[in-house]
Amino acid sequence: MIDTVLTPATAAALGITRHGIAHRIGTGRWQPLLPGVYLTHGGTPHPDERNAAALAFAGRGAVISGTVALRHHGVKASPARCSRTLVLVPPQTARTSSGFVHIRRTHLVPIRPVLIGGLAFAALPRAIVDACLGLRSRSTVRAIVAEAVQRQRCSLADLASELDRSARRGSLFLRAAVEEVGLGAWSAPECDAGDLLRRAGLPAFEHNVVVCDDEGRWLACGDVVWRRLRAILEVDSREHHADPDAWERTLARHNRLAAAGWAALHYPPRVISADPSGFVRQVRQWLTVRAVELGTSGPG
Image (cartoon, rainbow, N blue to C red; front, side, top):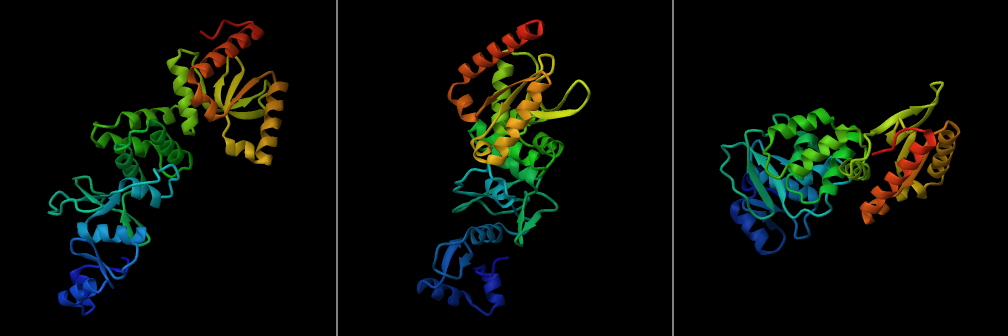
C-alpha cells in the first residue's frame, strides 16, 4: 500500500487517534480523499494515491479494473481521461460508490489479482472488457484490443472467454473488435480498412499473412492480401513514414513484391478515415485493373 494513504485503522496502528486525524485535517496538513480514507499531505493526490485510496475504501478482496487498470498494464490506446475508478468487489461487500470510486459488486472478482506497485488490479482481459463496455468509440475499442493482442499482452482466447462471461449490454463494439482481430488484423486502422472492404462486398482477403514468390522465398507480410490477384494493401501510419529506416524497408519490400509479380497499394489511416467511400472505390478499381492484368475474373 501507499504510506501516504491511511484509514482510521492504519492510523491507529501508528498511534494516531481519530482526534489526531481531525486535527491534521483541520490544519490542512491532511485531507480526506474518500469516506474513512485520508491523504497525509495537502497537495494534489498522485494517481497511485487515488488508487490506493480506492482499494482502502472498497475493502477486502477489491481490485481495480477498467480504464485505470488498462493504464497500469501499459495499454497506450486506453482513453486519456477517466473521471472515476472502477473497483470490483465481492457481492457481500456493503460499500457503495462514492466520490471518484465506482463500486461494482460481482461474483467474477478475480481470485488472483495482478499486483502492480503493490496495488491490486484485474488481469488484462478483464480490465479490457470492463473498460470497453463503457466506451462509445468503436475506433478506441478496436485500438485497445488490437494493441493488447498484437503486443502479446493477452491472448485472443482469454479475451474472448472473459467477454463470454460478461454482460452483453454495451458489448457490440468489443465483440466486433475481437472478431476482427481474430481474422488477423493487427491494428485499429487495419480493422477499419478490413471492415470497410468487407461491407462493400469486395473479394475475400487475408490479414497479416506471409507472401512468398513462386519458389517459396519470403517476400513480405502483407496487411491485407488477395492471393488470387497477387495484390497487397498496406495501411501505413505517419510514424512509420517518419522513420527513415522503416521507409527504406518499405521501398525494399515494395521492390521485392514488384519483381515477383505482386502489386502493392499504400494508404495512411488518415486518408481512409477521411474518405472511406473514396478509399473503397479506389481499391475496387485497383483490383478490377489487377484482374484484367492477370486475365482473371473481376473482383466483384
